[in-house]
Length: 251
Image (cartoon, rainbow, N blue to C red; front, side, top):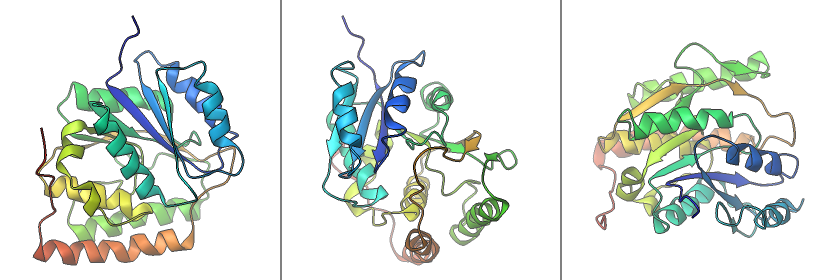
């Protein structure tokens, strides 16, 4: 009998043919059972084809959602979250495909939620110093001080506010009104953390080492950075007048 995993790793992809097979095999090689959901935004390089070929080997563990065109990181994760809830996973992870997030750290994030009482566990680059490898100093400083900016504006204590390596418990994603999450780029990562905190969930940071991608190209752009910068101000102003909507349809 095949053991059913309660943990789903959601990995958005766009042109990740250099990384996707190695990432999938690495996650499935971990000592704890994880399932993977690839959310592919119509990668013209054949990323989805590689995944579907691997499904012949990993018939029950590997899943794919194919979408037409680049629709944004946030919408990819929202689609993945809804899929995870429909399929009754208890722990839902966000992770990049480019190995900037070490798959072994999935075990630490899972432990924080499954054994140590966290509702959201963040793989944090900045909770114990600055743990970033292969970034130029200019980008390290931009990322670090962006988190300082977010922390000061929103009045939260999270050190790595833009982190995209996370574990959510099912209850968090059931409670957040996912249709009311607005932002699509890095502001999405901030908005999800801020919403979870506002709703009273226990959000913790787990130290990780972040290593810049070696294969493929970065998806960072000026428009994504601009959305995050101004989006934080919008979130703060909105918080003065309304509380975050929660999903009333929780089982």
